[in-house]
Length: 314
View 1 (cartoon, helix red, strand yellow):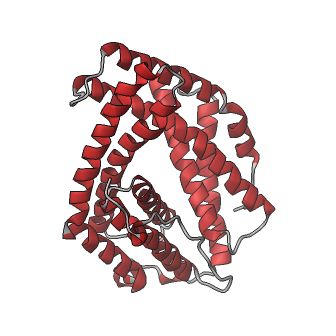
View 2 (cartoon, one colour):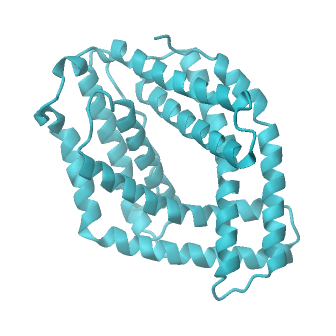
View 3 (cartoon, one colour):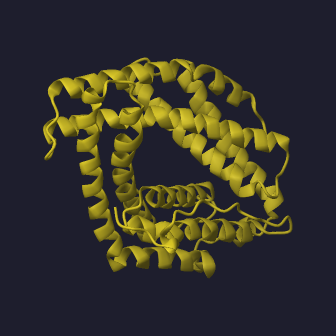
């Protein structure tokens, strides 16, 4: 990896600071610009192949896309910009997947060194290749132009120029308008959790997809709560965010294990310079399956507890 300068160091999300007298439009603008600052602050580090900067840039982009979804029924980012953000998210995610496999998932397998070492080396090679491709992509003007256009959208409130813009909806007080937005995110999460807990997806592939949908809903609910936490404080809200964060960690591990299955299959077909044996691949896939089963079993209690939480009512 390239030596990082001080300005390339990873930057975590700053808390969104809203005022209680803000309109929902003011809150939307501040939330969007907050997310964009995190994305921009980590772009140089990601371009210089920093694993953690890439992760934080991706977190910033996830937060931004969650904000766009949260406000999607009130104001919509123009489709070309939204498509550009989706494409960038896909690029960052593909590289991050190899990072996680090489540095986290395989390292967490309690196995003899000779059974995993070759796989880790092969995964690290793929990670480095993916970082190199991402670095080249981030150097092109299109990415900075995209972020500049999205930043201008928020900074200059360009949604006001849209023919179907509803000024009244965004001029409500944020303290009042935030409640139905958060309640909608809660209801969506509870519905998906209930579907998962009711066993409506008995086939493992379908169950994995259902868990993925719960993970996405939990992520969006958590970000929504964090966006408005400064104007909707309280112990219930803090507990809710903490529960969502814990659930995300559990579901995130399950997702990493599911992603590992696909990446290991790729390594079996194209191992690169570091040959890996069929036995090593089979061992790792078997270990991932066993770990997944244990993680699924441990999900029941936190899911049940989360459904009961009601930080806001709307």
